[in-house]
Structures are given as C-alpha cells and as structure tokens.
Length: 147
Image (cartoon, rainbow, N blue to C red; front, side, top):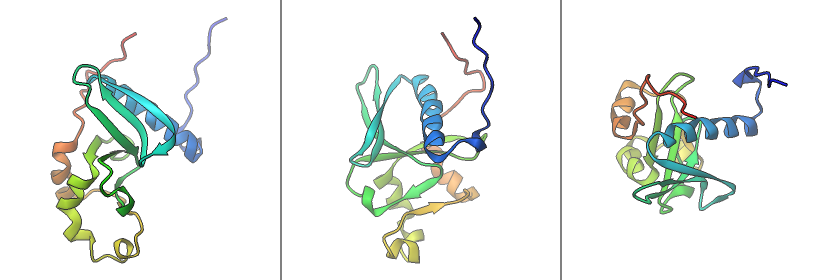
C-alpha cells in the first residue's frame, strides 16, 4: 500500500511540534555543509542540539530560536543560536557571545535586559541584516534532497 503524503500547515502545529519541525528543516540545511545534528532530549548547557562537522569534527552547541535572541543565561557557554528570518527567509547561526558584544550597546539600557529577561528582535532592520551577514547560512535555490 502506498503512503499518502499530505502537507501539514505549520500554523496548526503546537509549539513543541514547531520546534521539532524547525530542527528537522535546519538539520537538512546543515547536512548540505557537512554537519550531522544530534537532538538533545534536555537542554545541555543551553543547547537544543549538537552539530558536528563530518570532516573537521567541529562541535557546535546550538540553541534553536524563532528569532534573533540574546539572553544573559547563555553567557560563557560557548553557545550558538540559530534562527530563521520569517517563513521564506534566511537561516542564521551565530555565536551568542560574539554577536552580543556587537549589539550590547543597543540593548543594555533596555528594561528587558536590565530585568534579566530574554531580549529578542521581532523583525530584522536593514542594519541588523547587514550585521548578520557573516552568520547567514548560504542556501542555494538549487539545493535538492538527495536519497
């Protein structure tokens, strides 16, 4: 019997299902660049998953987010944050500490940051997109699924 495939609208997924969905999509993207991903059942040092490069053995602890995010609890954990800019947008993967040092002057006086809450950007300004360029994962329209 043939398997019937029916697309599931992203909007109908609950938050846990969306996180799983995004992890799977990102894993496919990272595979194109030689990374194997391992999902963690419990945040380990702030990471949702580990990405390890096949050849270089580079090892990244990654927290998956829905938007550009900074949080004091990620300080000194050598943690990378990954997010997708909108439904059809680009994926970004950045070292939290490295990028925080570049934006801290913009956020350090905010009530959110002073109250030790997560600081995030609901959308990206042109200036922020320019700052994020080195962290953009270069996805080609020619990318295809290989089996």
